[in-house]
Image (cartoon, rainbow, N blue to C red; front, side, top):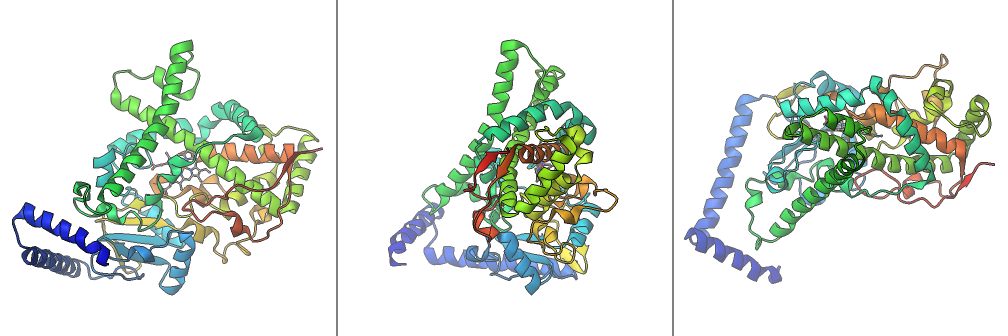
Length: 477
Ligand code: HEM
C-alpha cells in the first residue's frame, strides 16, 4: 500500500491541477455524485418495477461483484453451483451492468426463443466500437437492419438446402484434415472477455476510453482492445486477400466467396464488407473442427468400446476400407449418435454467445431490465441435466438412438445456441464434423489413454477444448 502512495498523490495532483479544485472538494464531489446516482437508480427502479431481480451473488453498490468473485475457469460449473444455491435464473451485476445466467432449457426456450424479438441483441461495447471498430462480424453486430442484411447473406448460402454444393469441398477438406491440419486459435481466444459472464464489465464504465495513459492499467486496457481489433481484422483480411489474389491471377470465381463477389457491384462497399466478414466467419469452422476433432479423439481414447462399435458399423455398411460419404449417412445411425454425443458431452461454447434484450422483461416474477442486461444460456448445464441425460458426464452415444432409427432435428442440438442468433453455420458444421468423425473412424485406430478423469485433459481456459492429447493414431489394418 505504501508503495502506491506517490502514484496516488501524482494522480490527485494532476486532477487537482486540471480542475483547479482542492483534493477534499474533489473527493466530496465524487462521493456525492456516487450517492445521488445510486439513489436515483434505486428510486427509478422501485417506482417503475415492483419486481425483484432474479437471485444471485451480491456485491458492492455500483461496483457489483468484485473481480475476484467472478468465475473465469470452467465458469459454467460455478454457475451450476450458484444455480443450486440461488435459483436456476441467476442475476449479478458488475460496474452497473446486469448479467443473467439461464441454467435450464425451459427458461432458455421461454426467454431466448419465445421472446426472440426482444432478446436477440448483442452486448453493445461502445468502448470496443470507439477504440477498435470491432462490431463488424455478424456475431457481434447489434440487432439492427445491418444485422438482418448480413444474416440474410449467411443464411442464403449456408441453409440446409444449399449444403449439397459444399459436399465436394468439404470431403476434400476433411481428407486433408484427417492427414493433420494445425490452425491458430488466437482469434477465438481474443474474444474471451465477452464469453465469460461479468468479465467485460469494465468496458461499460462511462468514458473509460478517455482514460489517460498515465492512469494505472489505463494504457494496458486500451492496448488489449486494440490488440483484439488487430487479431480480428487480420483474421478477416488474410483469407479475403488470398481469394482476391487468386481471382486476379486465374480469373476463377469457383469458390463461394468468388461467386458472391462476381454478383456484387465492386463499388458497393457495404455489400463487399458483408462478403468479407462472411469469409472470415467461415474460417471459424476450421478452428472449431480442430477443437472438436481433439474432443472426438479424447472420447475414442477413453471409450474404446464406442470406437470399436463405430468401426464395426462402418465395416458392415461400407465394407472394410470403405470411404464414408454424405450419401451413406442415413445408413450409419451409430456414427450419427457419436456425432450427437460429441456435441452434447462437451459443447464447444459452454455458455454460448451472449444476447442482450431491447425491452424490459418480467419472467417468472423476476425483472430483467432492457438497459444493459446481458443474457447467457448455460448450455453445459442443459446438456448435463441428469433428469434428461442419465450419467451425463459419461460419453454414451446409445442415448441418442431410438428404436425407429429416428433422430431429433439438428435444431435440437443445444451447442448451436438460441433464438434468432442461433448459429447460422450449423448445417455446414453438422455436415463437416459428421464426415470428419466417420472418416477418422474408418481410417485410423485411436489408442487408449491411461487417465480416466476426463477433466484432466481440458485446459482451464474459457473455451471447452482439450489441450494436446498424448494418444497415438495408427492406420487401421
Ligand atoms: C460445431 C461447430 C459450431 C458451433 C458449436 C457453433 C456454435 C455457435 C453458437 C453457440 C453461436 C451463438 C448462438 C447464440 O447467440 O445463441 C454461434 C453463432 C454463430 N455462428 Fe456458429 N458454431 C459452429 C460453427 C459455425 C460455422 C461453421 C460457421 C460459419 C460458416 C458459424 C458461424 C456463426 C455465426 C456467423 C454466428 C453469429 C450469428 C448471429 O449472431 O446472428 N458457426 N455459433
